[in-house]
Picture 1: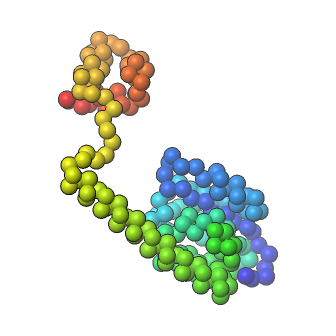
Picture 2: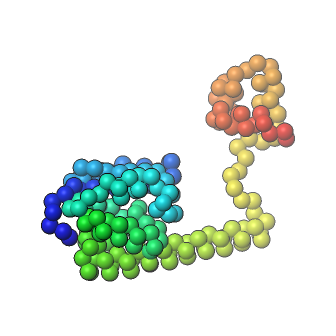
Picture 3: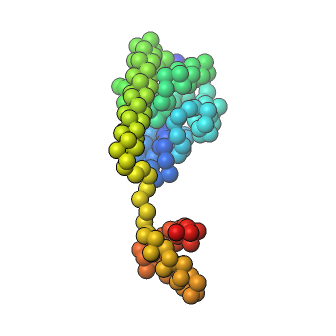
Length: 191
């Protein structure tokens, strides 16, 4: 790692809106990160992540980027290496805490980082393959895929009648124990 004292920068990411990155942010702040870039976006590729791109522009010589887990930074070896190269070219460090907190700008750190990024990519491919096999098996067995219907066709017809009679969608949603979105969906369903 370079000797210039710089800023400790954190990066946190979760994949979906129902996930929370607060735990990652708290861990990064505990490490001493004064700048934290956090986002809710798929890690599929580095270019589709605005906060990561902002972080890469922000980082300067002497700064060190901290990430709690490798898969929060990159899901494939190519992206992992490109991110590391961008930071190294700027003279910034990169520390991934779930691989021992080794700065990837050291020879050993770079080796460990590269190997683990390749292993993570392989495991991601294996997970997708197993998922595809499960879906294919379910289809072959005639099982339904996707979300189950919340309301029966009879309940949907009742909802349409209640709306026609002037009852509010909020009251209907409460009566059936569903969201207003479900009520609106039922109104649009011709069953």
